[in-house]
Each structure stands twice: as structure tokens, then as C-alpha cells.
Length: 99
Image (cartoon, rainbow, N blue to C red; front, side):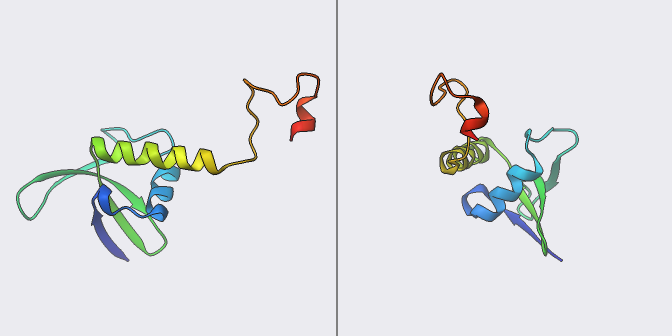
């Protein structure tokens, strides 16, 4: 199994999908974040993302949070099969008619 350290700038859509699915409620400092020293002596914080044939350590920081937020926004924009409960299609229709 391959092991790769990935910066947020190099995240693919597939890795972002895995990251969001494996950490749907975000990551916790104590349980999810791995801290290590890089070859250059820099302290790095990362979260582990498991793929079929690769384990990714994704470096975390404020820019990763922004990338995840943008990715989630894109996913929600692409989904057509949801009901907006705040703005129903027709006030007289039953909810089941909208499914």
C-alpha cells in the first residue's frame, strides 16, 4: 500500500470526496490529527485518508478548510434531487408528491 503526504493544493476531487466522507463532521484535534516532523524539520499536522490502494496524509490548515467548504458547496449545487423545506414547490402539494 502506498503512503503519500498531500498538500491541499494538490488534492484531487477523489481525495476530497474521501476526506469529506471519512470526516463528515470535521476532524478532532485529539483523535484525528496526526502531527509529525517533515524532512526539513517543519512540524506538520495532517489527517489520514484511506483509499483503496493508498493512505494519504492530507496536510491541514485554514486553506484546507476553505477547499473542503468549496468542494461541499459544489456537491450541493450539483444535487438536483433535494427538497428545499424553506421554499416548497407548491404550498398545496403534499411532501410525498415532491419526492
